[in-house]
Every structure is written in structure tokens, then in C-alpha cells.
Amino acid sequence: MEQTQSIEELSATVKALQERVTALDYDLRSWQMKAHKYCPRCGGPSVPSKPMNLPFSSLPLTDAVMMVVSEKDAPIGIRKLRAILEEKGMKEKMGRYGNNMRTAITRLVKAGRLSREGDTVEMLK
Image (cartoon, rainbow, N blue to C red):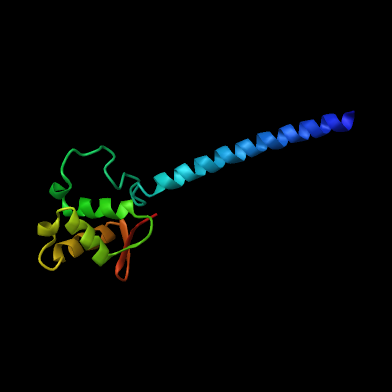
């Protein structure tokens, strides 16, 4: 009789602990999703938190680069980034050879918002 009661108590405890682990796992995943949205240096938002009602092509080039890079989870190549920006209507702002885009990337790297490894760029985590 006592054994069945202790087994029921143990199974209730295990079930409560499993639910707690699931809740903590969900919290951890939500924190990881939010982590890349903040600048590691100042703690401010890296990407504007308020939705903008502007067309993408009217954004400053640095903001456009940040938006495209923040959408990707993995590092993105410079050529792929340029192609995406051209598709979204930023061709005139990038310059003939993409020099303005490279300048924007360099400024974002120096500001600590992006990291660059060779020909790939990614958000700092």
C-alpha cells in the first residue's frame, strides 16, 4: 500500500519536473531569439523595434544591410547580400561596383553591430 502511494507521489513529482523543464526550455529559446536583436556594446536595439511604414528602397543603406543580415541565421556572403539588396530596389544606393554597400558594412563592423569573416557577414550574438 505504501509502495503504490510513494510511486504515485514520485510519478507526480516527475511530471511536475518535466513540465518545469519544458517551460524553462521555452524561456531559453525565446531569450536566444531575442538576443541577436540587441547591440552587445550598448544594449540598445540593433534593428528598429517600431515598424517603419517606409518602402525598403527609401531606407538608409546601413539600415537596409542590417535588416537583410538580421533575417538570416547563418553568415551571408557579400555577393548574396548585394543580390538581395538589388532585388529590393537598393541598386542605385549601392553604387556602380557596390562600394557604398562595402562602406556601410565596414562602418557596421567598426560599430560592433556585424562581424565579417572573409567574404561573409553575420550579426554579432
